[in-house]
Length: 442
Image (cartoon, rainbow, N blue to C red; front, top):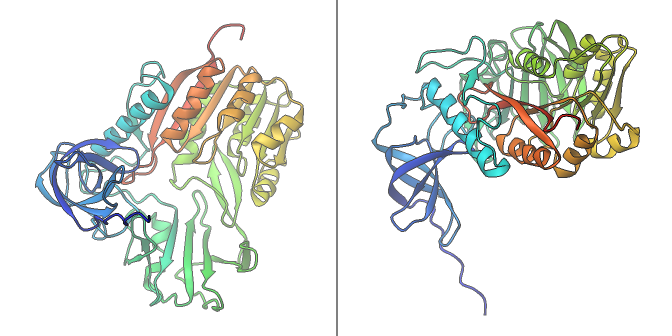
């Protein structure tokens, strides 16, 4: 007998007391019947009317938006962005919270993930519980730092550029993104007709005047003639292979960090906050304390940011091996680090390439894995290399906590952990954990 379809609860409203912040930019609440709600646009301690945006009867939890604030938190401000709010742009999670409260919420999420997934208290992780703002981002409540140097715009059917709504393919047309860096805003993407395009990536490099626009046409559409307000290179995402190909201008931008210039190919990864690369290099190097002659690994190395910093510090007697899966990123890393004879960059997945190297011992390791983390098997392999110190750079506190738990099982402890608010107005946070063997002589 076929089961009756469950009733959708989308549109239902509940008056609820808002509980703690949760990973992902929402807070936890419960209906009078005990149903769990993940509520966006609310703050801990508030009483709100929550309207369900996703879920059905019997579901483990429902997603909802706070559509009416009955009792406001002292941390609440009026969202400065006119496109923030229920059903609107999904790019920012905390426009309605004071900057200090945003950092406090992120700290609470990190602490909860450490406790739940790694079995660590902040004290055991060598962390004081604070999330530090990036240099220059200390702005008054009600103001927004313009920090995002890479913005991906979606294009609606009428050709207007905008941003995706939360958990949706629908486009919120905008006239200006408040968190976009000045170099991105100067391109005037929102003011043009982009009929026929599916998406537009706008990039404003840090430390150079390089600007780049990557256009992804809808199937069969022609590229528009791009005449922007300043010199800019234009790339196209090809239908046939998804690769990024040059239309005109350089096929890369030049980024600057740690007193070095890095070439980053079209669509390649680079930190989006202008202060992020320098902030993270400084935190990693202060934690590792490289010595002349050290052998170091830079895993998930991208275009070679940490490998370059390590190479500078371990000197001619030291050596650095970087591993990266992206073909174009490997080409860039080899170009960026060509001056160092004892730096080698290998292409492939870390879990496949590292065992083939035959390396059985290293002094230092840096890993900056994707959002999913490194995983138990890779962590166990890294622990077997008996590194003096390991720096783990993470953009997701849940993945970080899981991997720290695996390191703990494998004989490593967290010496220090630092957290940086490199994504203001969003729920994202960057962490740097420094690990060392739990016992001397390990």
